Amino acid sequence: MALTDIDLSAAYKETRERIVALVSAPGVDLGAPVPATPEWTIKDVVGHLAGVCADILDGNLDGVTTPPWTAVQVEKRKEASLEEVVEEWAEASAKVEPIIPAFPGRSGPQFVGDVVTHEHDLRAALGEPGARDSAAVRIGVEFMVGSWLHHGVKPTGLALLVDSGERRWGTGEEEPATSLRAEPFELLRLATGRRSVEQVRRLDWTGDPEPFLPTLTWGPFQPSATDLPE
Image: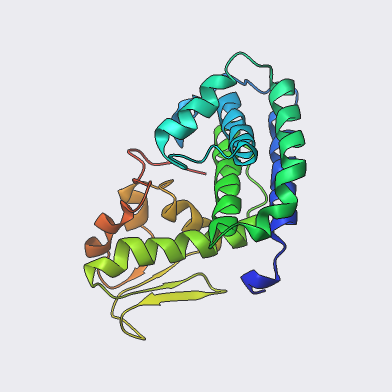
């Protein structure tokens, strides 16, 4: 299925509903740390996601995606209950979700890629894997892998072929000497800093992976300092 055939609004809504069900389950420790975002707890991640939608509606986009911007979102909701944060997110999302396809440039897929990345951050923290073949994962991997290759790999002049089994991305030569094959979910986690350098090195490479490991530090992402098993 092509990315253009996937409903961005529906993919975001479905991901939000999965997250809400996940964090609202009995026995969830909302104060537990999230290894992929170690400065945040389970509730902080939900606060960030609610805050993104609120900031979009308020036009508060100065510093969008930067740590100071997201830190304010989390801090503003520190004292709120999970129920209050979830309600705020639902109310804001009801207005944001219908307009996601109209976001400028590629920011619609980026927005969906962000929410699904945090879904799996939460799943990893809670030991609740699932939904790895969702529409949002497909959207996220398309945006994130393409961005990694464009902003991380291409400026180095290196040639790399990435193969998810469903889709191929490349830089440089049509069939470069080095290739990486991994499932879409694994590529999404790699391209969003949710894998350590050692985890990336251990993936299914043809050719030498070493020249490509420094390219993982693209945009806002850095490789995880420790292995993040999922």
